[in-house]
Amino acid sequence: MLLIKGGTIVTAERSTRSDVLCDDEGRIAAIGPDLDCPTGCEIVDASGLLVMPGGIDPHTHMEMPFMGTTASDDFFTGTAAGLAGGTTSIIDFVIPAEGQPLFEAWQDWCVKAEKSASDYGFHVAVTHWNDRVHTDMGRLVHEGGVNSFKHFMAYKNALMIDDAIFLHSMQRAGELGALCTVHAENGDAVSFLQAELLASGETGPEAHPRSRPAQVEGEAAQRAIALASLHDTPLYIVHVSTREATEAIAAARLKGLKIYGEVLPQHLVFDERVYDTTDWLSSARHVMSPPFRPKSHQQALWGGLVSGQLQTTATDHCCFCRTQKERGRGDFTKIPNGVPGIEERMSVLWHHGVVSGRLSPEQFVAITSTNTARIFNIYPRKGCIAPGADADLVLWDPTATRTISNKALHHNVDYTLYEGMTLTGVAKRTISQSLMVWDDGTLRAERGKGRYVRRAPFGRI
Ligand code: DUC
Ligand code: ZN
Ligand code: ZN
Ligand code: ZN
Image 1 (cartoon, rainbow, N blue to C red):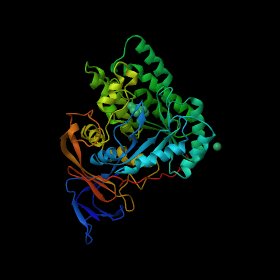
Image 2 (spheres, rainbow, N blue to C red):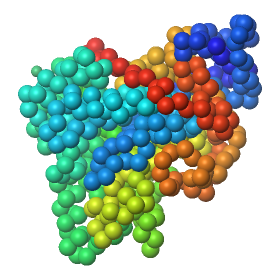
Image 3 (tube, helix red, strand yellow):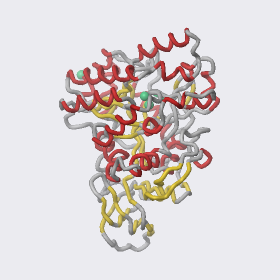
Image 4 (cartoon, protein in one colour):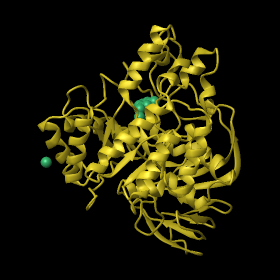
């Protein structure tokens, strides 16, 4: 048992001075001022600290096979890094191999993820359509504890689906009470622009953002919303990075459509100038999709988060080391797309969101944890500080600062986007299943300790 004494509990609704008692089953047993310490209970001094629900990162790609290689963080190293940064759960993506039945792919991912240090769940990607997919979606919802499916409108000749497949999947998800999620970029437009750039001799990573300009995301977001509106299917748009997509989501919500949007901290902090360098590797390390944008888009993303039109933050944590990025030397379209960020997410959002005055601490909790738990139907087990909820907590030091250095991070990749950045707001301690797994610089992540979190379908969505 753990008794967290003297801290300020911050939830998505309010902040209160209160103690928290965590039981031996990994759940919160009691909350209140001056709780007594049962015999044998360890006391954690939280004075001066905020006690918040552990972060939930609903968008990671641990050990994902992608673009001819495999993401370098596995489920252990990636979730351990998350714990060190205050993130206690992830939702990763099952990506079926070409033609692979969805249920079988999910089983493969379940085996890979057994080594996770933190709790985890899966979205399953629908990459083709046939009767088997229809059946497997049902099995995944009813037997697999999956309540969300992923759709890629980009990555032509690989993961990309056409509108007909998307509509079939939306209809089936609607029957099942599952949520559709989407990577919204027009993959045909990207392919066209990539070919044009390569033909004119533009082969370096600085061509990457030019092959995926803002209109490419805006068009896909609008189309996805229009398709979802046909049957009023709820839709969650991942990594919204443009003003165009943000405005499309806000307009749809004003019409009463159930559209949700996710933002990545890296899009809030970095802009297209990261590609404006003669250092090939530095530029290639920033190759992710959607790419970094002209700075003006950041205002819209912050506005979306502040107003609640965009609800969640995630990282798209997808690590590729220097040798993997080198695969794309001479052809930017072959640079594996992806960047790390799971350990840095909470600090980056506190510093740039709360310290800057844009967000309240309660809004910070909402966008790093509670809204995600609600949207993916794991609330109030996760994203909540209440008796009976999982004892997944972060003890946050709101005034401590740290300078990010890859050497001090725990992910399995040879760089961080935030190298040298000084941030205020640090995860001082992280508690997962009532255990102190990150203790002021000491990581006690345990391989295989994480549990698969089954997510029930929605009653009527
Ligand atoms: N974008 C990335 O940058 N990496 C993984 C997949 C994606 O959509
Ligand atoms: Zn059916
Ligand atoms: Zn994506
Ligand atoms: Zn992704």
